[in-house]
Length: 161
Image (cartoon, rainbow, N blue to C red; front, top):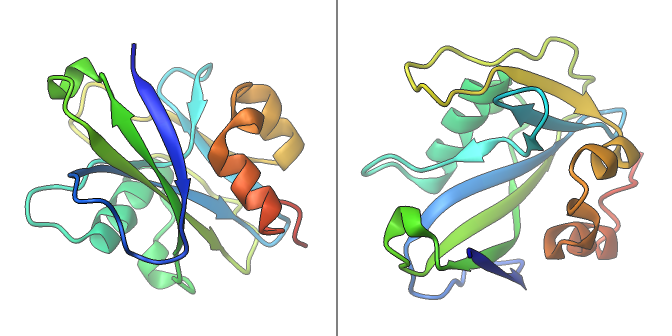
């Protein structure tokens, strides 16, 4: 069983573990959150794995664009790291401990045209949409109890307008 332990942070001081994944909460001008899915049923935040030699910021820009069509490098790009998970017991990584980063970004326009990018990955994202925070808690039932949701709520980010 994979175990994830949340740690809030507002700086880049992280434990000396490998960063395997970066994910981003993208809020638009109507305070809607962008979510993605491979099957239209199981939803998640956009993000993924940095490629060899890629900076975390570049990985975030690439993953978000591939999964949502949102060109973060062409909008007011100012991602804010607000925490991370230390992940253990993940059989994909031979049970090695690693870090999953969480960023948030607010885009000053309404995101109308969302579409997954093209990829040769057989597990590619096929669905993307923006939802209200309340809708988010319904399509990702565990999210409201997560450390990342609670941290964004504590910071006053979730219900900004």
